[in-house]
Length: 124
Image 1 (cartoon, helix red, strand yellow):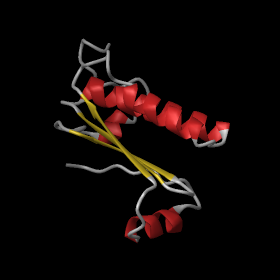
Image 2 (cartoon, rainbow, N blue to C red):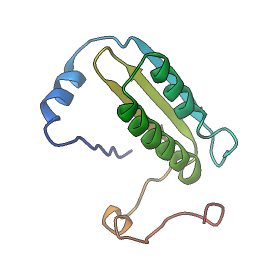
Image 3 (cartoon, rainbow, N blue to C red):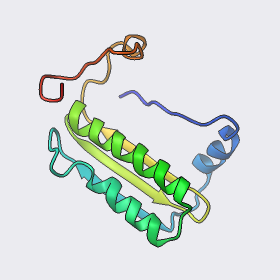
């Protein structure tokens, strides 16, 4: 299984420290994402958004997390054999991770070309 990470410039050290720490999250949320189930896909990101709203997270941060997690959740439902959204809320940051089952993307470079898609007929 391949892993793909995006770490914003300037946050590399903080992310490294987080991954090497044993700090427990204040709240852990895990949501299953069934394959091709667009009726339930998006519920995990909605629950996370509602939790963060109740916790008083800044609206700009809340919006970015809600949009990014929803898009990732839909992608897992559409392009994998199912997976899980794992969210960990800490007092000073939020870690959202998506784990899916499937063959992965055979050619990452080609997948980054604008307009290229590996989507099947169900989502095109």
